[in-house]
Length: 506
Image (cartoon, rainbow, N blue to C red; front, top):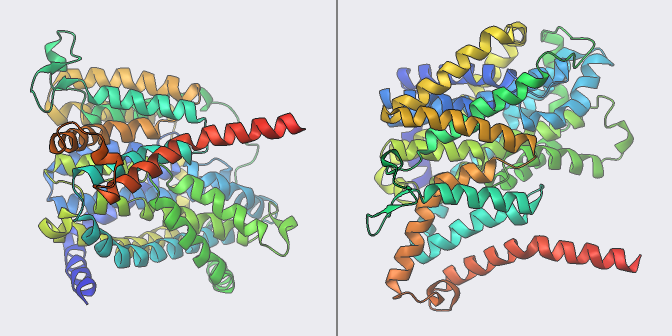
């Protein structure tokens, strides 16, 4: 009953006229961001983060989250109509969405199925979010600095141990991000650290210019290389007709169990730090194909190949916010940027939010339900207009985005140092993307680095420098968290040894 009461309070925050207006604006901007390849939901949230200082924090988080939901929906359009993934999590949708649109000549049905499954995914995630957030936060209230440091280590170790990329590159990016957070004034002594005598470095590297540079300018540079290449030979024009809606609804209802199961799986994948919507979408597609009675039809425009990855992706996107509001740990790069917004608004992320700022937390949770329904209506009625965004000359759009990057960086602290940071980290982001180094662990390390150091030093102060407060039985939960993190860090070594052993036997 307590959860229902809090949810009613959150709905009251969400349905206020100004909140609904900002939600609508955020969804439209997110859809535009999702349609434009090379920009991305993370970059969109990072670019508009400075604007949120002008509105109440309850409205600000709804606005930024709406951009995220809109981007999740928006990547559907380019994937289905143009075979160009507007977002990384839309790649799996191309496998069956584009064949249905081009070869089966049913673009409207492919879009309708994608939007309906996206809606189911976000609704399933909202139910899980509502039922799990408060109990998890109440448990987390009992955590002290050793337990919180253990959780931070799990957050970093999941990137290395459970990630799909090269674990060495992931570790390098994580360490680079942690190194950046050490620049500035020491959190205990107050002395300068790693500033090399530069006064402008005393305040450290702010996470907003860094993330805007990497995810904004860096992605623009990458996309600029391929922007004028002819990636497809035929572009499909489509609108969703009444017959498409009827058939899409009928097929979604027919495969409702698959869609809900994919969404449930996606949610719990998204909860894991370092995962998010992209791996969830591929996992949803792979599992659906593996357990299908007709796996050979996948890749030819089958209904299940659209429903499963899209439901999983949208549910995972919402799931990535659960550890953010309950533990202060972002589950995805976009959640990491949202976490930086909490700091900017003077909020301490974690379980205390549920006690100190219930309207803020439950307004965000309630907005999942409202934003999901609103975004579905916008998408079903505005496909031609959203697809037309692709026709905007990139030479006209790029300067606007670049200027927005620099303005967004400058207004945070009103110092030119942040503008230079944006430019430099845009170049760094470009180089990392070209060399296949993941940006997500770097972004999360920049956001969580200072907090992680604080928990570590508080723990060592509590124990007079004895590391056993983290690894020993005197703090059982902290010990479990730390050994799980160590196991995850060592998991790639285990996989390497096992593969080497199999090779030797062969």
